[in-house]
Image (cartoon, rainbow, N blue to C red; front, side, top):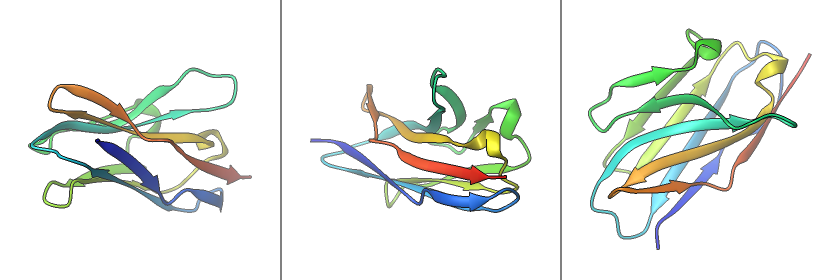
Length: 115
């Protein structure tokens, strides 16, 4: 059974940094695009950043220049380095992966940015 498990969330002051990690486990032959999404209270889930298996990245306008997505294909992991955090970045962050043409989600990790 394929699972995605996030870690690295927490409470940080505005201007601070956090690094999220997501590990994929199970019988996995190939992982295509991986990404991070977030959902703030009362809002819809939105894309934060994605990265293809070859390393091409895509970011939401709101995080460009502050967040960096990366992956380690050998370890089946994806990361999100978040710098210059703002209170509006507060949300539950979800890892997402296209694994052998099936779409998987992690359970989410809370990121709270205090002003």
